[in-house]
Image (cartoon, rainbow, N blue to C red; front, side, top):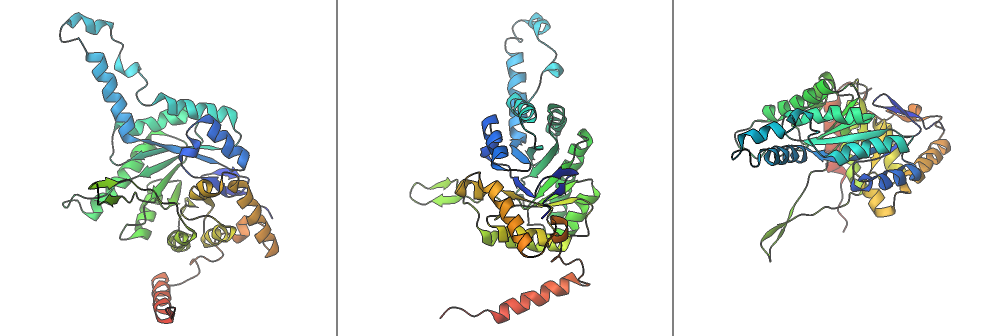
Length: 332
């Protein structure tokens, strides 16, 4: 079976990628992921707050003492000549590109349009093959409308696209009221890919210490159902690539997502649970399953169970919804 696929205009040897995670936070980790079989590697996110915090720290350091000795400002370099932001991230991109043969995808995580988006250009200059833009924005302001939230996402996308020539993938949450329309607007705004979906941080409460307790739960295969539905809806209607993440653990998970329309599947929780060797093994298992079932290529498999041929997707979804509820029988 020909496992070759295209994602963000990049030709990949198979559709299994490592998603953004601490596993790629240093060069040794990146090399391990490549050796384990990742066809491309998404680096951990660099956050808007990190970039802005370093910028503020640098400016405060430069200004120390200048109120006492005005002439001291003549000894300070021009701020524009400084590399504002975490240098280590750019170094990681550069070293990863020199050490690895697979594409390296940088990741930016932001919530508001701003000067931090200029850092995308520095990532491109450092050698990143593509960029994943992860907008984590929880609208807790009662005066902010859904339309404003959507426009904020699009403004961030446009700001980043303005800075770079490399492909930009938009990692979305599943909580838009009109997901299909939002995906189309991202596509029209120049997104080269959509990653479905971002898993939102879900804190817990410590009722003894009366504190908010940070908590990260690994995904399960049951969680593919949400991206599965929307990939099936979007396939054939977008110019951009489609990536599936969240809940990818087994070859059946991967095959379902590809059949619904995904160009690639991304692994994170499965790597923490089973180890990084899961990357290459999953690619082999997709090959085995496809060969056994008569598929010649990923291209032949992709979108074969999408809703592209359905005349009325809304009626299709409604009918499935009713069928599911009416056919359910609880265990006695």
